[in-house]
Amino acid sequence: MRPFGNDITNISNNNGAGNGDDRSNGNGNGNNNGNVNGNGNSPINRDNVESDPNPSATNELGLDTETDPRIPPHIARIGGIVTFSPIAGRGVIRVVRRCEDAKENHKLDLSECELMQIPDAVYHLMRNTELQTCNLSGNVLKKVTPKFALKFSAITDLNLSYNQLSKLPDEFATLSALTNLNISHNSFIVLPQVVFKLQKLASLDAQHNAILEIDTDEAISSDCLTVVDLRNNPLSRNCRRKLEDFVTSFRLEISQEAEDDW
Image 1 (cartoon, rainbow, N blue to C red):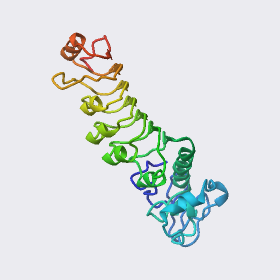
Image 2: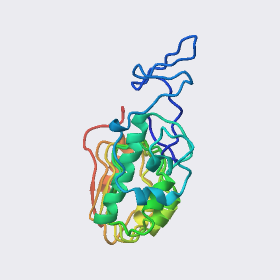
Image 3: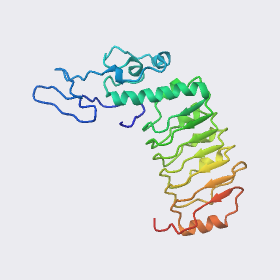
């Protein structure tokens, strides 16, 4: 499955084989699991496409579903690209299903959906839901926009682990109810200072990043923080020594082994 961008149907036209192969002969006939018509269009077996979890919900975006009859209507209504593979379609359906679940339990789980960005459709589907937790782990996110903090300001638990993030927007400071933040297994070089502006943050997991230095001249104190986990980061020897001597109101966990040669 290809990663999804801001538009979760923003996936290139695939008239090749369902397994990713793109073969065509001189007559213009492609090969999609052996079934391709003379126009190069690949018919979709709707028996292999998951059913719409909630047609009324996916209809909320109000896009034209008659553009391409091969596309299930609930998928066509979410984005702007009119043709994509059945595999991509199932990925979109997964996101929609999880949004529907979140309307019931207030816990949005979009982990391992291969998202490059948080789609605008997600904000739209969640517009009347006050989320408590959000799990975006295991995607390919390179950034989280300020819109996230503005739309999901009431969340208490946020998991951003196993992505490609290197910074957080200043608007994260408005997440006034956030108590647990996991940014482990990302690409942070410095610890985002905005985390110390989160009023109720109690636990910060920043393991397995690329953090070299911690700016101890900046405020790294918090009334609510109980633990900041910085283990398995390539902290310089000088930085580790400063942190070991630094007095904090929370438990600061760092690896004891030498990490200078990372």
